[in-house]
Structure formats: structure tokens, C-alpha cells
Length: 196
Image (spheres, rainbow, N blue to C red):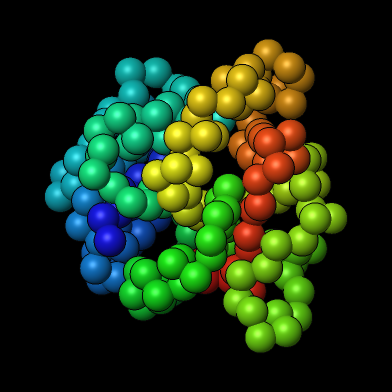
């Protein structure tokens, strides 16, 4: 499987970026792009895209996904991380065994907030219709397939996210993902337990 990995980062008091890149590489991923806002910690061992101004949470995230989709055209899957997460070892191999068993999905969150964790009943990826639209939380680590990312990026709701009120203050990526899924009939999955 071909992967494209993106990391969004901004100026922080703590430096998380190099540790996350190290863990991503330990998992066996090597095609990594870092989308860095001004004064962010960078690691030149990966492809670095330095933003010339502060984009903010939503804008940096969505522009990073557009870039990943445009640049990494051979990728089967796209995974975007926030820089301040911890990732479990073995995630890449695990996902490569899991993903073919999920026929069609909108996105899979590797991070599962406490309000969305469930007893798995033997399944590690859970889709729950009660968590859609504005009730979606958690875009710290998201996996899209090539097809689902294309559907997401070409959606008018996603394109107009900041104009329709949910993207106030350049935030609410999870709401944009949830509204897209609700309106398009896409399934969002949460891994249980959380992998980050």
C-alpha cells in the first residue's frame, strides 16, 4: 500500500514535531510532509512546507490535505496528524491489515475521544450514527482512502466551511468532517481503543 503522511504544526511552547516524525518513521512510513506555520519547529529530514503566515487550524489542515492529494497521486491512503499526538508503534502494519476489510468509508479517526469510545463487540473500528454532523470530535489523526479524500475535498460543504458559520475563528475541522459525512451519507469510523 502506498501512503501519504501529513503533519500540521504551529508555534508551540513544547516541541512535539521531531518526536512524532521519529515515531511515524519507526512505524515504517517514509513519505512525510510537514506543514509548518511561522516559527514552528521543523525537521528537515522530511518534506517541509513553510507557511508564509499563520493559516490557523482549519486552513492549515485543509490546505495540507489538498497538497497531499495533489502531490502524492500514487497514494492509496492519506493520513494527517496534528503534531502534538503520540502514535502507537505498529500502526502502519495494523492499518494495512484492517483497511481492506472496510468496504467503503469516509474517514477513520485513529484518535477516539472518550465520548465516542464504545465496547467493540469484537470490532475495532466502530461506526456510530449517533455521532454525526456537529457531534463529531477528533481530527488529530485521520485516515482517508484516495477515493474518500477526493469526495471530501470536492464537497461544496467542505469548500464553504468557513463561510457557512461552522468554521468560525478558523476552527472546527471535526465539524466540517461530520457535516460532510452526514450530508453525503459517508461513514466515519473511530478506532477503539484509540491508537494515538
